[in-house]
Length: 329
Image 1 (cartoon, rainbow, N blue to C red):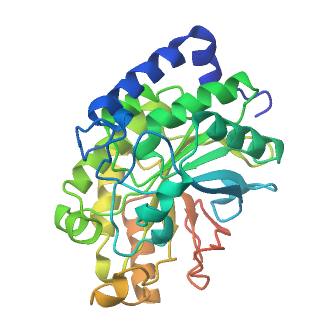
Image 2: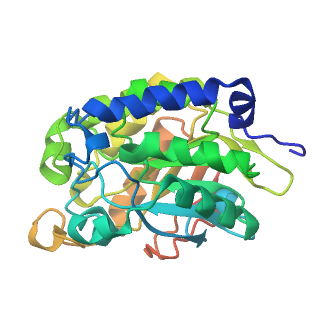
């Protein structure tokens, strides 16, 4: 699609983006920017349950080549990895930055510096700005975005989230975010609490994803170079012993969102962080488990998206060579 213009530019020009940022920023005074609903004053330096204060934490940023093909292109996704997290996944593959708050607090940056990072990634030729684990820093990201737009930012925004998001916050991102990239981790509340230490994960995540779908729909907008410009791509990490509840997840997507929604099916699980000590999680997934999940996609008529080759099982260089349309075997 030639001539693509990020949706946030119109909001910036109209003044509506500034209005929304003011609403989001005020939410931090009694923090309710995610379902943890801490109600503490982060603007005054109080620490929320995500172990974050007012200033955003940037653990790292770079052109990243481990995402799905339409996000990576030739020059990479411009990923910004935010420190800390509102989940405590026992198998988190980024636990060094998501669950290491004593170190991550050293990586707090100003809004101006975060804006500079966005511009730097654009100047390095990245195809988008990938906000990785943005949920607990949405107001801060939007403040930095406003500065970056004034300095020439014009790339699509990718909201790469665990989906434990507030619908009220997501509504304020309508017309700001072009690409939603949520996980759908669990189908059952028990598993979300046991393995990610939060209550109500399936309810909150499904409500959040429904709001994302309302904003951008099922169709992926891909330009002539094969780059994703707008849309929803739901990630599903296959876990050992069906802890992810894959069948219920796919049934819900097909019935509530529609069979046209695009998925990214991932085989890259490995026992890291605390998973080695948990009997149901202390191994890689088996090929038979992965094949069963792929067969469920056929069962529910889900044919759009990407899947990892089982043989790769590589978190750092996941192989997304197979495009679903239909699912390849």
